[in-house]
Length: 119
Image (cartoon, rainbow, N blue to C red; front, side, top):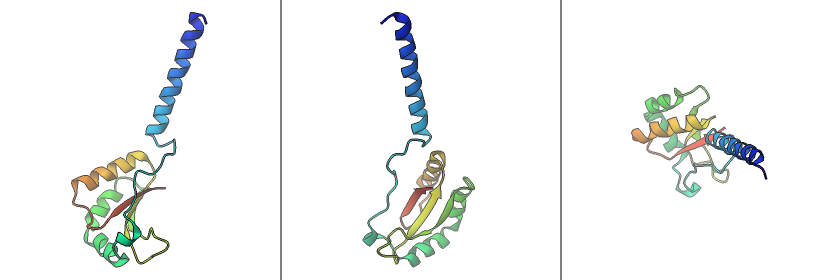
């Protein structure tokens, strides 16, 4: 292999690596969810989750203000037991998830589990 072919190969490999890193960091490569919720039998009732969200409305508004794509609501993630609930935050992009996570980190939370869900 001559030096010109080696240089072109290295440049192409570098471009593929850079494109892959870009795609991964911007959520373009689907990977398993970073966020899960506790087992259904450990979740609070829907009423408890609703009360917690109402009590911490200011925190919910702060999270929702990050972007118009973000919603904060009571979710029922367990199809086998819809009496169990949590605070569910839906978002569209990885940057939004990071911002939501940072807000939750510096606040005391809702007092019930929070589940982040990418739309």
